Length: 257
Image (cartoon, rainbow, N blue to C red; front, side, top):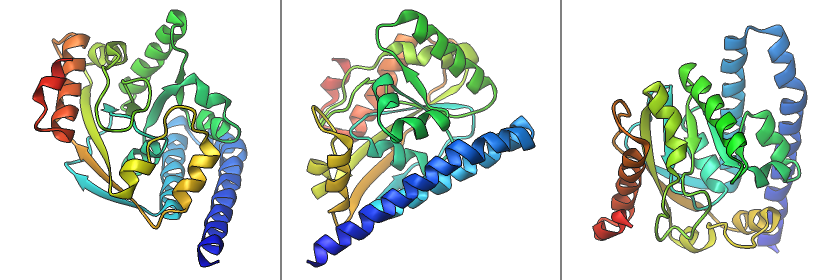
């Protein structure tokens, strides 16, 4: 009975938080764009988005251990991808624009919130659209905004890191932006339950996460990679190797897969 009451309380808190997010995205953000300069509106929106993610993190009982330093603005951050939780985990640390697959834009409520937050949605296989997204990424990096991408292109169980899509690194090369590899590892019971893969649906997975006492995560900000004078394939391999070696330091051979 106690567990059911706790789940109901936490689920109610999520519903209230998402309703609040709809108000922010649908009313507050547009008003900020009218009443304030572009730069001041962005700063305020970034602060609101991080506060919202902090609240979501608290409801989910995320226990995050950080290794390494958060980069300065104008960085392309690339991470291995395990779950939708990754967005909450990384987004807590710095204001940024996420790059995500277009499927998420169609999710009820979540898709709308993501669009209003400035998420860049990629339609896989649509070369024209990918070029448009790359141009948008270039503009954001030139404005000293951070961009967070998941170059694997899909989620995994977290036991390994799939090959990276090198095209995501092109905007960093063209703007000479720094690249920040991030290694995410879910620990304890979270290692088995946190992955969001296959035919999982968001609501069912969210409820499973709310049933947990805590969700333990290790986030490692790995050494920065410079992009000047490099090609995207070399940088892609280096970023992936850095993440693989953090997660599996005894499996060096996998970095060349």
